[in-house]
Amino acid sequence: MERLPSWIRQHLAALRALLVLTLVTGALYPLVITGVAQAVFDDGANGSLVRKDGKDVGSAIVGQSFTDADGNPVGRYFQSRPSAAGDGYDMLSTAASNLGPEDVVDIPGEEGRQSLLTQVCARSRAVGELEGVSGARPYCTPDGVGAVLKVFPAVGTPTRAVSVNQACPATPFVAEYRGVRVECGKPGEDYAAGRTVPVRGTARAVVPADAVTASGSGLDPDISVAYADLQAARVARERGIPEERVRQLIAANTTGRSLGFMGEPAVNVLELNLALDR
Image 1 (cartoon, rainbow, N blue to C red):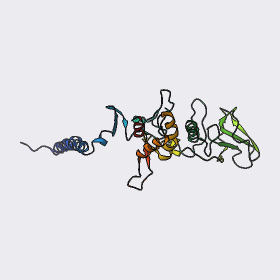
Image 2 (cartoon, rainbow, N blue to C red):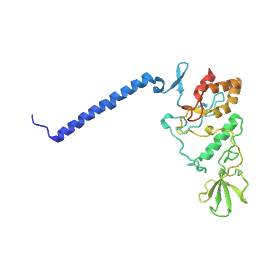
Image 3 (cartoon, one colour):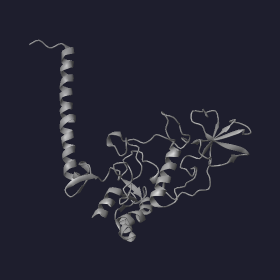
Image 4 (cartoon, rainbow, N blue to C red):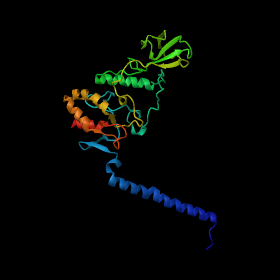
C-alpha cells in the first residue's frame, strides 16, 4: 500500500484529535463533573430550590418580588430590594442598571427616563410611606425626585436657575439659588448648556441603601438586617402577631459574614417569609 500524502495524514491526525477531544471535553468531562456535583453538592447543583407543601416556590440564591398583580407590595410579607433584571428578578435578563452616581438629571418625554438619583428618591419615598417612616434623604426633593439645579451661565455669576427634575407646575424645592429665583423645569426645553448643581439639603436618610438600590446581578435574594428591621413593625401589624416574634424570625434567618469577615450579615427574604407562613 502506498504511503498516504502528507496533507492527508495531517488531516486524519487533526480529525482523530477532534474526535478524542470532543469525547473527553464534550462528554466524559461534563458527565464526571455533573456526577460529582449531584453526589456531593446535590442542593446547589439543582438550583438551591426551596419547597413548600411539596411544591417548588423559589430558590434560596435567587430573589423574587412579593407583590400583588398590580405590582404593589403585599403588606404581610417582607419586601426584597429593587431589581434591574428585566421586569424584576428575571433570570434571563440578569443585569444592573448601569447608571452611575453622576446620573442625576432626568430625561423627560416619551423616550425619556428617570435618573438614578430620582429612582432612588422615588423608592425611598415609597418605602417610607409603606413603613410609616420618613422617606427623605440627601439630594432628594420632598416630592421624591433628584434635588438638582441647572444654573446659567455655566461659568460666572448665575442669572438663571432651574429645578430640572421638577416639571412645571411643580413648586421648586428651593426658592432661590445665590439670589436668583429658581424655576420649575419646562418639558421639552434644553438645559444641557447649564451647570449641574446637586443640592444636598439637611435630610437624614432613615430608609437603608439596599431598599432603594438594585444589586449588580438584579437577583440578590438577601436584604440587610437594617432593612428587615425596618419592615418588622408593618409585617407584625399585618399578620396580627407580636413584633418581638417577627424579630426573632429575622434573627433566625440572618446569615453572618462570609468566612467571618467578608461582607455584612444578610437576611434571606424568601426563607424569612416562609418561616412567617409556618
